Length: 183
Image 1 (spheres, one colour):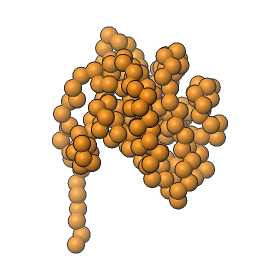
Image 2 (cartoon, helix red, strand yellow):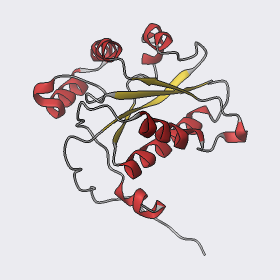
Image 3 (cartoon, rainbow, N blue to C red):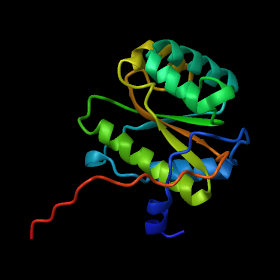
Image 4 (cartoon, rainbow, N blue to C red):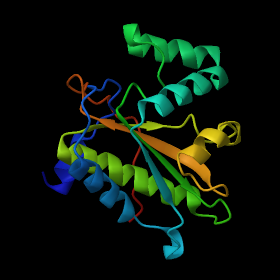
C-alpha cells in the first residue's frame, strides 16, 4: 500500500477481535511511532504497550468511574453486549506519554499516534485514538500508569487501541473542513 492510499484508507476501529496481533506487527507499529517527528528532536516520548487483560480490565473500571454519564452511555451503545470498555476491547493498548516540561510534547505524541494509526492501516490492523487517560485523569490513574511503566514525570497525551478489526470499516464521513489558497 503506498502512502497516499494508506492515508485515504485509515479508519477508526471501535470493534476488535480478541486475537492478539503478532509481535512483528506490534513492533512495526511502534517503529512507525519512533520515526515520527519530535520538536527540536527532543524525543521525550514513552510508549507503554499493554496486553495484560487484568490491567486492561482494572483500567476500564477506573476510567468508567471518571467518565461522565453521556460518555459512558455512548460507549455502552457502541460496545453493545460486550459492555463498557474505553479501549473498545482491543487486545493491545499503547499509552503514549511525554515530559510536559517541553512545549511540543503534546504535538510530538500526536505525530507518533498518527504514525501508529497509519502503520496499523498498512498492516491490516485496526486502531482508535483513546483520550480518557490524559488530562485531569492522568493523575487520578497514576498508580495504573506507574504499573504500566509510564514515567512519573510524564503526562499521557493519547493512547492507541490496537488489534484486528472485528468488522469492516464504515465509510468515511464527508469532510467539511475548508481549504483556502493565497497565491
